[in-house]
Image (cartoon, rainbow, N blue to C red; front, top):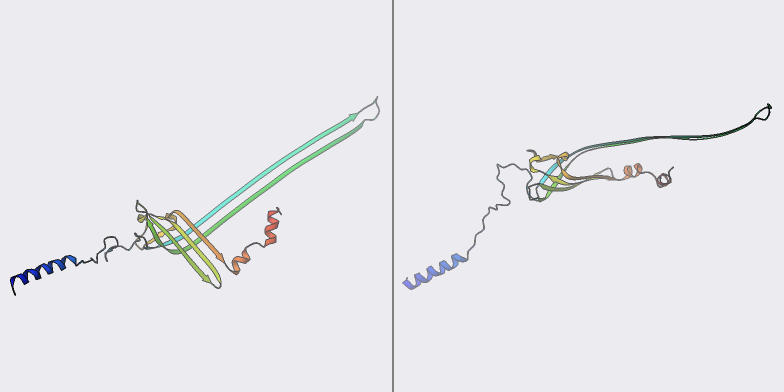
Length: 192
């Protein structure tokens, strides 16, 4: 091989080496070591929420009012028997009322991290649908979770959610029967 060919081959190899690109299999944003914990921390990660919510409210009222008016006239003339008249009216009102409501929801739902806030808190969103004997029940959950509140099993209690919105809805034959009839609702609107 002549010297010009060696130089030319060397230049060609250098030129081709500059155009070859290699990508690394390591991505700093998504890397998770095998020995690291599996707590949710990135968008798309899953997190289990144990929903244990209990609510109770009681309201009572006592109202009472009473009014009486009397008017009387008595006449007497020179020792004769007296004549008299009387007018009396009365008005009374007494009312008592009590309203009591309580609810309890126990469920477990897996939600997805939808965003990470600048302070590191995780926005989560999830939906679960159960269909048992033609009764459809849905649980919708959204909220914000602090990573410190997530335990080693990647589970968080619903009481640790901020901005929590938990909706439980059902539809089917049992849900329809639990709803008041149209005429009952109409009477309720009329105050009966």
